[in-house]
Amino acid sequence: MSITPTSILQPEGKPPSGGAPAGPPAQGSFAPLWAVIALAVVSLGGLGGMFYYAQSLNTRLDQVNASLQSALSAQGETLEKLGGRLDQGDTRATELQGQVAQTQNRLGMTQSEIQKARQAAAELVARQQQQAQESAQQAQQLSSQLGQLQQEQVATKGNVGSLTTDVAGVKGEVKTTKDELAATRSELQRVIGDLGVQSDLVAHNRTELQELILRGEREYVEFDLRRSNRLQKIGNIRLELKRTDPKKQKYTVNLVVDDRTVEKKDKNVFEPVQFYQEGFRAPTEIVVNKIEKDRVVGYVSAPKKREDRAPMRSSS
Image (cartoon, rainbow, N blue to C red):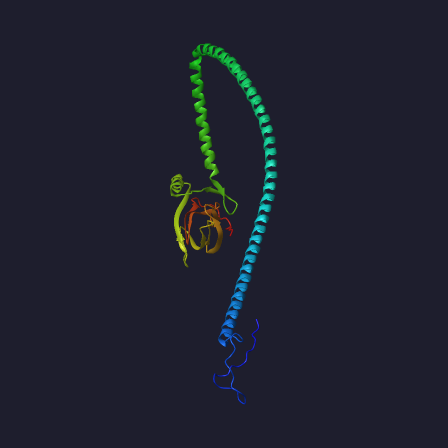
């Protein structure tokens, strides 16, 4: 919109300089200045409103476009998910069809197995019936045999006296056998000592030692030997305990006899430790029947009868 310039109005009653006084202004020739300014302001305001409205429309169009794009994107994702679910449904349907086929096959096998089971049950019933018939026949045979046994029992009652005599003879034989077994057990208690000589009976405890003492065949001296740095006199010998091994049931001692010292090393419990003394042909024996830490308990068994002098032998 253009604005046409107007002439500058002169104040009333004053003519222009150098000329005649002007007459009154002509009516309708020029618009007042304030009207022109007001029209310009109104025009500018209308243009600004139209620009603001156009900007608002553009913003709303952008928002609608963004909303449409978002909705289209969401619908695309939804369609993709639906497509994936449809694919999964197809796969599951295929699997179910396979399972249905397997189930049908199994049902066919199950029916075959049921038929086999029925046949087996029928065969079992037939066998049981046959066994029942055989059992009845056996019962009849046993009844007949029982009658025969009863008759034989009556016939053998007269032989009871002779059988009693035979039983008494058998009892005597049993007693003799028991005595022989007892003697055999006694012989089994004799062992070989560390010198390779058959030992006297070995006592495993104090009660058995008392039984040996009552026999009176040898001299017995008990001892309770503890580990120390000195010799302990036991009968006519002296002993010194060097060490013990309760776990392995072994011990080591120093033996002094006839002025000679001999080490008996790593000897076992109940093992006859043998050595010879001057004037005796039979060996003297040391038997340990209890081994503890730094302590052994046992006895010395020596022959009673002195004989010709025999050379001393020892074994470590």
